[in-house]
Image: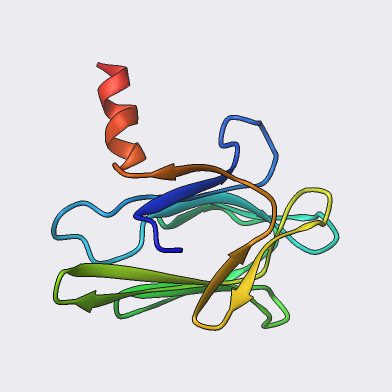
Amino acid sequence: MLIPGFILGDPHAGEEFWLLADVLLPGEKAPYISGRFYDQKGGFLLRMQGSEVVENPGNCVFQSFGEGFRLLQPAGEELLSLRTEAFANGYLTRIQGKLYDKRGSLRMESSFESAKVLGEIQRALNAPVRLQEKASCL
């Protein structure tokens, strides 16, 4: 299913797994991702905020390319890959990878050219969360 953006997990749950694939603003092409990521054993790998790595105890590698990026674990295994493609009526960001929660349970995995979410999506988004957060701070 195509949705403008989503939240997987709970961003306010402390050190638990979560992923925010935020809705892009007009004119944006690069993915806007935030979250806490763990390995298959539940070890904390990294935290991202606005597609920037802000904590990286797992020594993951961030590789930027064109309109996307990929995150690799130190052994070279792909954690997450995102790329945004332009279409006549807008943009589509493809998300692939294997994401685990703090207990080592699989929460998302690649499926063809997209991703399959395991468990429930916290919330589908129609508007960017980062704008809603700024408005609530005023």
